[in-house]
Image (cartoon, rainbow, N blue to C red; front, side):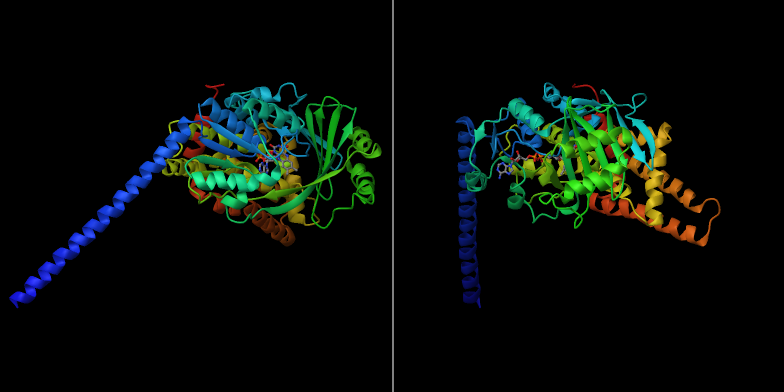
Length: 501
Ligand SMILES: Cc1cc2nc3c(=O)[nH]c(=O)nc-3n(C[C@H](O)[C@H](O)[C@H](O)COP(=O)(O)OP(=O)(O)OC[C@H]3O[C@@H](n4cnc5c(N)ncnc54)[C@H](O)[C@@H]3O)c2cc1C
């Protein structure tokens, strides 16, 4: 027995010695590897390696490059095409977006590009017109409450000049190069655009909602150049705005399966014969001018996509590759600039961006802090795009009419909704309030003069519609993050005050 116990003791001691040695060996090796990586990263920094790699120098990439470079970061930007983009998107900057630009120190990007001032939304429905200004008084907004329209390409080019975007490569080199740099280094913050989404996120879940068809009428000026003209037409809205001092953007929204061919002239006929008669006479001449002069007609899909974070540590996807909403509220650039402002502020305390754990923590906070602006705009985008679609459905039409009546009635309701649209007051609770009041007033219309069974049925469906506009967003964005008023208050206090402009 004694012999047996002695054997057990001996073997146990031997085993513990071996295990302890193995553990200490493995941990020593890990420490050495980490030290080596740190040294490599440190050396890379010392010898000019970038702190941040940004892929894509569009609206977001250039602004981020500028903001981070100003904070002393070494920024490396990769853009596939440095020529001035010519495209039909991102042509209106909301007042809230202009505030963000100013906060980033980039307000001069809107200068010398022939940008036009916008003060009002001019809404047309069934021969009636309502002019709703961005609220000027009592708006708690620390900036001039006007928007700007401009050629997106000129704005991007100005941003690139500011961001000192230097790296120019052929598109074919891009993927392997970016992949190699990023995956091999794995120690810096990589902020990505477009194509990088496929590398960093789950397959895109972007949903095509509709198509924007547009062209430019040249050598003309609207009678009211400071108004954004929005016609509540059929099948959906038609818009016109002064794009530069001599050009007017004309556009209509169409739906999948209903796009006439541009090549065989069907589109021109459709715009001339179906859409132009719905445009108010005062604007029609300019609407027809571009068509008659053979302006190039473009078609762009409008997409919606919820925001998701990348699992790849230290990497973040921003802009349209990250989160999209319907462009009827023209707010994509505003949300993007707000995101950049938040990210930049969160990163400021970090000396070294190679610490992917810390950077990942920052990215998680960023995801929550952005909610008041992004969730409000995303929900509003869905709701507003829905009410602009013409329908024979009584409930939908009541909602559409309710929205027009609400905006045309002026006063507190209209200015509150315009403050929301303009990104001057990005508060989810305020959005819910306005949606509720519009729904309520539309319900009253449906039940007037006496509540009939059919009227009650349509009212219930209207309520359902209104819930459908709200609930999926509440779920997707997070109920507490969206509805807890403190988040919106902190966002306003931190990012929408005038102090640093
Ligand atoms: C029809 C339409 C109208 C819109 N109107 C408005 C509006 O009026 N106001 C508003 O605020 N928002 C509007 N938006 C949204 C707005 O345009 C976008 O939110 C904004 O442009 C997104 O900026 P971004 O930097 O993410 O992308 P972009 O500005 O598109 O920049 C992406 C950049 O990445 C580059 N790139 C792509 N792939 C690679 C690659 N593989 N390697 C290197 N570089 C690459 C591209 O060349 C480009 O320069 C609209 C959107 C649509 C669809």
